[in-house]
Length: 198
Image 1 (cartoon, helix red, strand yellow):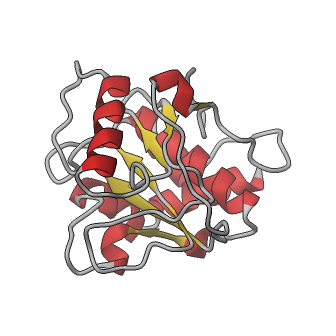
Image 2 (image 1 turned 180 degrees about the horizontal axis):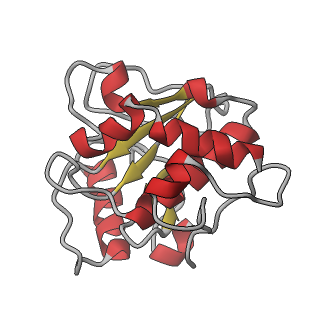
C-alpha cells in the first residue's frame, strides 16, 4: 500500500503554500501492518503511554535504493530484541524512500533510544536513510507530513509538539542536517499545519 500524500505536488510548493483538502481533519494515512512485512507482534503488558510529542528520526545509515524494506525491518526487529533486549523496533513507524509507511512497535508502547533522552510520551516516526549524507525524498517527506498531522490530530496536539531527536539529546545529529533544516526553518511544521486545516 502507498501512503496517502499529504500535499499535491513537489515539496517546495506545499511547504510554502499548501494545497486545499476536503477533509475536516487529517485521515489516517495508509500504513503497512507488521504482519504484512513479516514482523512478530510486540509483547507488552504495562499501561499504555499517553502521546505528548511527535519526535522525528532518521535511520542514520546510508540507504541503498535497491534494498528490500521488509527484509530490513525483520532484521531490525531481531537485532532490537536479541542484541539490545528491547521489546521491539525502537520506533513506532518507519517511512521508506518511496513513501510507504510501515508500522513498527505499537504507539501504546514507549520507544527506546541509545541516547540520554526519555522517549516516554513520544510518537517516533523514522525515515530510512542517513540525512547527513542523503536527502529525504519528496515521497518520504509527504508521508512524514501526513503521518505527523494524523498523530497530532489523533492525540489532540498542535505543531508546537513536533520535534526531532537532536532537540532532546546532545548525543546525536539525528534526524540529519538535510531533514533538520526543514524543522529549523519551520517548513515542515507549516506543511503539517496546512494539513491539519484540511
